[in-house]
Amino acid sequence: MIHNSIITVAAHAAKTAPSDNIWENGAGAVFLIYGSIIIVGYMLPWIIGKMRGLHNSGTLFVLNLVLGWTVLIWFSCLIWGMVGQTKDQRAFYRRMAKEAK
Image (tube, rainbow, N blue to C red; front, side, top):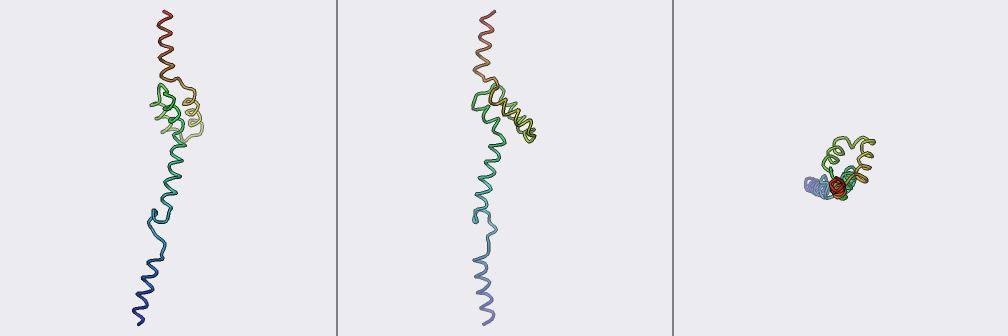
């Protein structure tokens, strides 16, 4: 009789124990959302530069990835991404320079 009640209690405890699986208790979804926000925020200068069609967005990507953790470089990359020369501007200035010759 005692043996059966111990098994029953153990089975009940296994059903009500907190889950170690982070996807079952919702912690995984929270981690995924916050992680995505942090990554997008960290790479925001490059995203802005890429969307604007920045001429040297590859250099901006590498600089932001490697040294973006410093606040000064991150803000410098952000400014570069927002006001840097785009491919269209570069082509326009080259065409104007050829016409001036």
